[in-house]
Image (cartoon, rainbow, N blue to C red; front, top):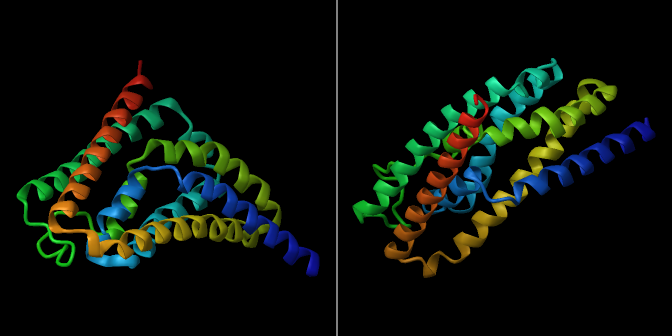
Length: 216
């Protein structure tokens, strides 16, 4: 029993480290988290993580059932990337339009706002990212295959360790930005939201190019 607990602890630590290496890379999920700080403060991190974790948990379950090879197929990845580009464009345009309206106030964000809600935004930002699927179809799938030796408990432990990396990083980012909110005037906040919208728009363009390349 003791050795099994140590092995599971090792799985959790390894999953946390692997997950953190991906979490710290800027991307759509990071943008959604920062965009929601004005509305939710520090809780933007946990809420976005929750939305991200829902779809990630379902994906881990699919991988455990053998979906990794399917997700790695070029037509599948290409289609996901193209649809994802559309979703990110919609999210980006909402953020840019919100910033251009000139009515954003970090203390009142969310009242009639077009900004993506944190849980939904976390889920959509994950589903729209083809590199998220590719990571899970390769590194993630290999990891799940290894921990399956410990059965469902091993897979659950791996998932918890992995999602905790997202939770820690996104909450730390939200906390850092919340601490500086006293310096965030409405003008600065509008600039932040507009900048994050442009950031997502760049990602949508990259995803579209990536998706089209898979069909050439």
